[in-house]
Image (cartoon, rainbow, N blue to C red; front, side):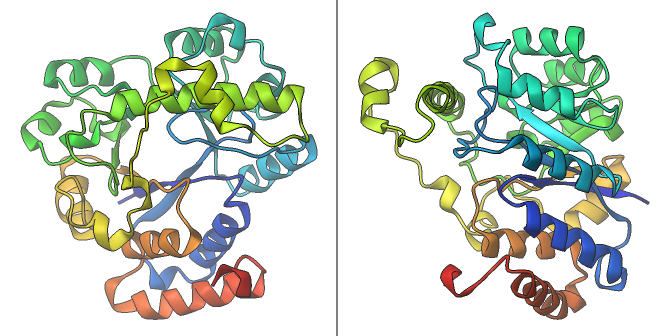
Length: 319
């Protein structure tokens, strides 16, 4: 039995995820049966193609090479979150994103896609990449979900509003290619979710363009709002700051026992843990909650935090 998890952020959480992989390799007795790491997803900032979560910062070419080599040498693919819904054709030639694609074009790495124009571009210019259909598409119609699962995608991430719609999930023909997002922080049935993705996409484009022109100047949020009237209203969302203990109360939440006792027997074996913008303490709790054996949770937490401290991933500045 394989229970495959996709983990958040290979760039900002590089050392964090590396420490977790090392712990998983060195102390398998602490973890549930069949746990595997299927990929680490995210982007190298400042990727203009990025979507789903805003990612600021800048990564050097050497850092990009190092991260690719480190994870790939362990058999772990990087999966790029190229899900910006606001892309235009002019963005396809972005130097930074294409540089990353060239560096990681070894047949192992993957892309998560939403925009049809970017998907077509990647299929044509980077055919070695396996493609994932993003949950950002917000496909909730049962018939369309099944149609999406039958398309030429390596993985299809199911909209998490369907997490407990077992009538729809049972009808999916190839459940092994479908990925379930288990710890979504967004309100179930949120009417603003798609628009939120659009606003994030616009801001990611503005940020990437700013960094290209003014690499040493701070990004001006007020200027962005003034230049983009469609994004000037106050969009306030506290969902992304929810802790594991708040997320557990949401109806779309899937518990570890449900994974092993319900979803895996149904034929699902791909599970996504979100958290690209979570602090490392919240993220650590999510990882151990889902993958550690319940009776080993306290011991696993102590070992993991000690490793993070020893390797300077956490310090007194985190408290």
